[in-house]
Structure formats: C-alpha cells, structure tokens
Length: 172
Image (tube, rainbow, N blue to C red):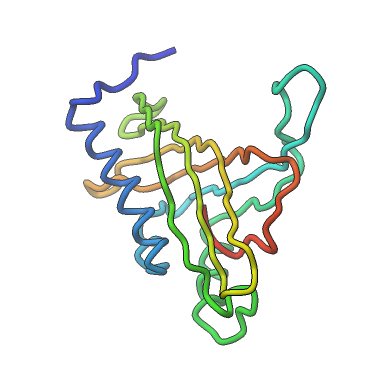
C-alpha cells in the first residue's frame, strides 16, 4: 500500500478543505454548488450491506445498491429537490455531516488522490419523527480538474444492514 499523504502537507490540507466544504454545501442545501464539486464522469454508490457470520469481508454486495448514480442522475435528483414535488424532503431535512478520520494517498492516475474517511450524518425532519443517525465509511477518488479537486468516485459503506431512516433523499 502506498504511503499516506503527510498530515501537515499542502495536498492533505486540500483534501480536508474539500471534505469540509462539501459537507457545508450539503448541510446548507447548496446542491448546485455541490454538483460543481463533481467530475463529469462521477460515480456515486452505496452498496447494500449484509450481515454475515464471523466476518465483515464481502459484506457489501457488488450487484445491489441503495443508489448507484452518475452525474445525470445526481443532477435529476437536485432538480427535483428544487421543485415543490420533492415530498420526501417536505419539510426539508436539517442535516449535519461530520467527516472524520480522513486519510489520503496518491491515486493511481496523475492528479488523483484516494481518500478514506468516516462520516456521520445527523438528520432531523420536522418535530414528530425522531432524528436519524447514519454512520458510514467513505472511499473517494478526488481528481484535479482545472486546478481544483473534484469528486470522481465515492463508495459509501453504511454501518447498518437495515437502514432505519424513512428515505435516502439526502446525499452523504
């Protein structure tokens, strides 16, 4: 395995700045700003997790996902959120994303960085439903495009096999 980027280095600082700005854009419902942080060929996946005896290996299903999206489908989701027909987000969720344990390595291609992080999403909707907590590990590939880091690939591994949230209308 390649050596991790030094925590006090400029490249690692850029990775952290990207992660924090992305979380802020999503928490503040600046979905168009978030889309601008994605590459044109972005892949955004959250495979279904199963519970298996004695091991966590192979607990993510390769052929089944809660979502498996590209830029077009993410754009369509954002466009729907901008209408009055996004009932899953009426009232809008109040969210807070906590990104932690960020580690980064040089990517396979020039200008790419591989990132592993933990994310905790707090989500509250109205005053009748209990809030959701969704914990996941994230594996990202960031790519330099025009001088900026952009998200080229994300795979989320949620820590629960059965999600206890009413819907997945928000982005992790």
